[in-house]
Length: 165
Image (tube, rainbow, N blue to C red):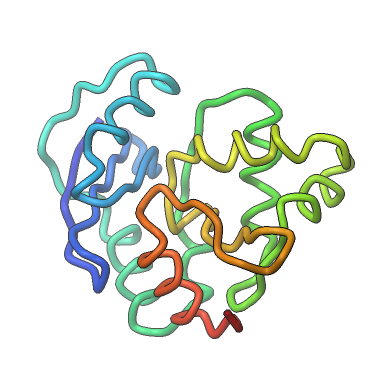
């Protein structure tokens, strides 16, 4: 696994990619310990070598931050996790930029309306911050709820995408 660092408006991003060029994890520089814990959990190791992420990954993230919000869909990614977690993460990618969804709404969308807490847990274990847009989940009252990178980053991402807060 290669670890790259990329500047963003939210601080330095940590990008972990595999030999095939797939993104395995994205996190913020001040959450490197969490990134490494997720790598161990989903990939069996947190051993990385410094390297540059593929140009396509870096370019798509740069384009997203420059305002081309659909650019995230161009990034090839691979996630470990359980079948349920992968189902939740795939459903997150179906929420368009500028839109939000509640945890209960996402649970219904995947056909598991009673799994609201499990959806929350899977969302919290998402190793691909921003790319798998866990920031688009909000509380039942429409308020911002926890975000691993901090609520200030979640609010910034949602404003960047044009969501009404």
